[in-house]
Length: 461
Ligand code: HEM
Image (tube, rainbow, N blue to C red; front, side, top):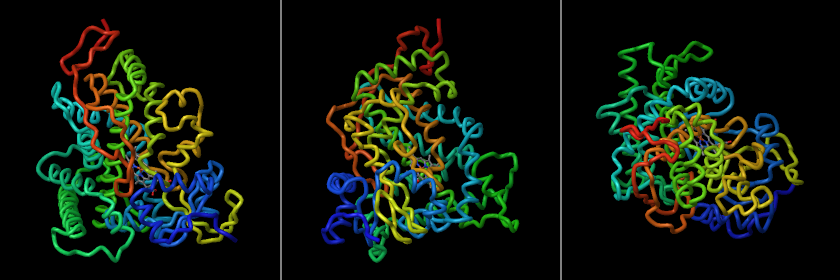
């Protein structure tokens, strides 16, 4: 059994390339070695961007492959060892079952109003002709939304501090933090000014705040609450045991971080692309202006052009470059290579979305491709697939569409400058390589409507 070919440079050089320039490095490997190749990253790791191979790997990730916790350990310092991401097998299956309902279907749709209100709170502070940082604004929205989903109505000093400390922790994800994650020996606490020291002190504070919240709930149980924390606290395992405080804390940490940073980045890209491409902006505004009720999330969710813009945003620069690692369980043939048990395989979402055979002129932002053709879940997979497919997929899609509809139907915005923005690594995910600034030009006046209500909502004549 032979591993697919890959770069011959020393393992340390490959690791550094992977940390500092993961996307160009993957693209160079694909160009040279094709749909499947091996990088040396603390051991051999196979990458693939072949849709058939991805299908095989993601549809049988409990049979020929597994999705084990040991390969997700880079997430442990941030999320703990009881997070959905750092557990596997039966515990993972049960936790997913528990978390699915509040993030899907009718339960999820009840957040429509919350998303609208939170967006209104943030964007009502924008002032005409005053530039703002898109990412910070989007982060404020997605953080408050996920906090409300997780904790219910959540206000006051503890909520504010939690929001601030978490945002600071996530904004500090430089490549050096990534080096610390990949090389545990470098995780040394040299005091509050050192990189790791700062991280663990902030994490400690977040843990304290979450523990206080859990304790307060235990002291004042209220069965009528429908938020995710109440649901987790009410859950019992097969022996009738509730989750421990540490388990609850790790799960909260997972939802709060995975649930806001990714969506904020995707929204930032969406606003960038919409305002970089006048024809896209025009078509999208025409579609939104024609909605009879622009606060009705069910209609927003069904808009075809908005859906195409949302999809193309997640295609061109996917926030998650990769699926979580899968490990071969029984000998398997992938793209003509016989892989032995124990081989680690990663699905490259980034490379799959850049395939010229699937997405002609793949470097261009063209939402129309999603109207002209339907892509399979192994050709377009911004949320991964199989047993570890993103649990927040429906929630993120819903939130992104409602936020975009609200912003675009309230304000006419413009980019402060039209220089290109490229994706770069931001911790374990990706994001824009520089701050994107926008400016409010005026209140949005729908073309097909005349009556505008103070909040920016409009009605047909
Ligand atoms: C645009 C936004 C988002 C993107 C692009 C994204 C992307 C991803 C990707 C690529 C994976 C790995 C899937 C795999 O290995 O097959 C993942 C997993 C995960 N995501 Fe997301 N995500 C987003 C939003 C969210 C939200 C809103 C939440 C929570 C409310 C969330 C929670 C999670 C969790 C907990 C996992 C791990 C699932 C498991 O191990 O079973 N994500 N996400």
